[in-house]
Image (cartoon, rainbow, N blue to C red; front, side):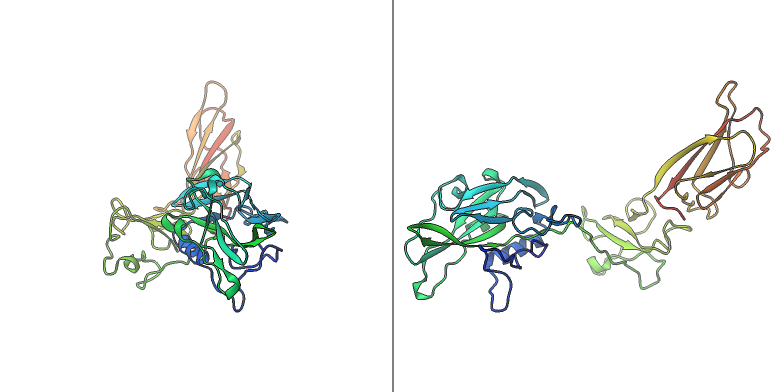
Length: 362
C-alpha cells in the first residue's frame, strides 16, 4: 500500500517488517513527521492522487518511496516535497547506504556506518533541500543486540525542518554492513479534496458569521493585521439578490472590518464570474439565441440579468443600437429572445450578446 497513510502501513515487501500493528511501537521519525505535517510540510502525493492510475498504490514507485536493491542500495523514487511553503523536486536515484557519499556530510562527517558482529544501527533517509539530490543519510549509535537491546534513531537531522522518507535497520552480515529492513516513514500533505463546513451566525442564516471563534470577544476585526481566513457559508443576506443564495460558497475574511461597507470585510469568492460573448445574425424579425450558460442576476434588481445586447449592421452605413432588457429582448434561463420591429433606422444584420455567468446553466 502506498496511500496517504504511508508510514503507518506495511507494504508487505521483503525488505519491510514494520507497520502499525498490534504490539508495534511508533518510531520517533513517525512522530517527528507528524509534527511536520502539522506545519503543512511533507510529500505531495501527485502519483498517489491519480485515482485512474493502476499503479498509484505501487509501494516502490510512489512519490519519494524508498525500497532496497541488493544488500546495501536504497532506491528513492522521484517525487515532490513541500517545506515551509516551498516546493522541491526529488529525482529518482539509487544510493549505497554503506558507502561514503555526500548524503552523509551533514550529520555523520562524511563517514559511512561501520558495524561488527551482533551490532546494529538505525539509518534514516530524509529530505533536505541543502544536500545533493535533496536526499540525506544519517545514522545513530551502534548497539550490541545480543543482550536484547535495540538501536535508536538519530536526532541530528531535527536541527532543521526535514521530512524522513524511510528508516533502515543496518546489521552486520557477510563481513559487511547490510540493510536488514527498510521501513516507509513518509508523511503526505493531502492536496484535496478539502472539505469545508459552512459557517452560520446564531442571529440567523442571513447574517454574516462573526469571527469571534478566532478572536474571542473581538467581532469587529481579526486580532492582528496580515491575517485572513477562508470559510464557507450560504450567501443569503449578502445584498438583496446574492449569487448562489441557498447554496454553500467560499468567502475570504480579511484582517479589516467584517461588515460589507468600506474596505476590508468578508469577500465572496464563488461562484466565479466569467464573461462570455455570442455573436449571431439578426435581420429584424424575432429570434431566439441559446447561450452556453445562464446569465447571473443583478444584486440590485432581481429581474435584471447581467446581459448586454448590441444590434448592428455589418456594412456601411453602419447602424448600431444598444437594446433594452425587458423591452427589446427577454431572458429565460439561458435563452435570449430579441423582439422584432424595434423601430430602428436602417437594416441590422447581427446582434452581439455579452453576459456574465458562473459556468452553469439553470
